[in-house]
Image 1 (tube, rainbow, N blue to C red):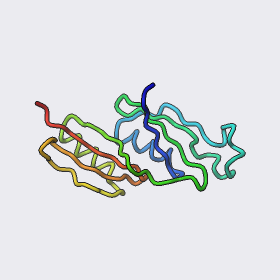
Image 2: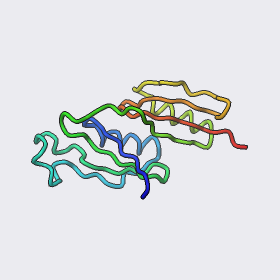
Image 3: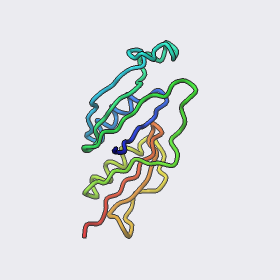
Image 4: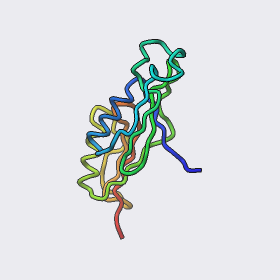
Length: 136
């Protein structure tokens, strides 16, 4: 058994995945739409193009995601997706991209444990933690 990360969106999963692909150098590896699934009769027809399940590879880690069915979306709480850039410049670029149009919950700055550390919620509602650690 191994853990996995699954992100839930409110109708904008594909847009978010395309944004992550562009800004994080990630790669979308699969997209399955509600209208193509055996569950298509359980959601309104306008959900046909929404994502029932997709996978994106971010820096070697597969992350799943999809658009919640009607009335089931909840904002993510009590979790964050963590990224560990190796260089402060990369941490700054990634943080700027993810916080653009979102909410900075802790500004990116040097800490006693990291060259750069910050937290934000992106424009798609996903919480992120960026940690560029200090190398010994």
